[in-house]
Image 1 (cartoon, rainbow, N blue to C red):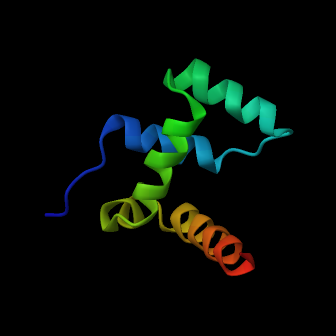
Image 2 (image 1 turned 180 degrees about the vertical axis):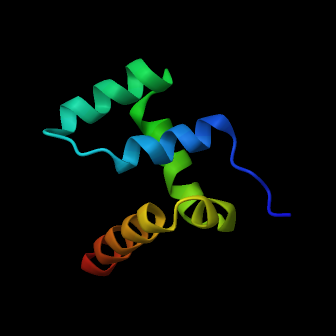
Length: 76
């Protein structure tokens, strides 16, 4: 059986599925809903994108975020 995501990891992916009117709204939600600073959130998210269990849990979100990350890396 595949390893399950932690509740925090599931919450991070759920937050990424939502649409945001502005970056400030997302940063506020990270602080208020998850109780973490945005830097730590993005570190966790980036690690999650490489985790097979995250892909198994939410393939649409993980693949979308991987494409965005890869495109940004290619621009550098």
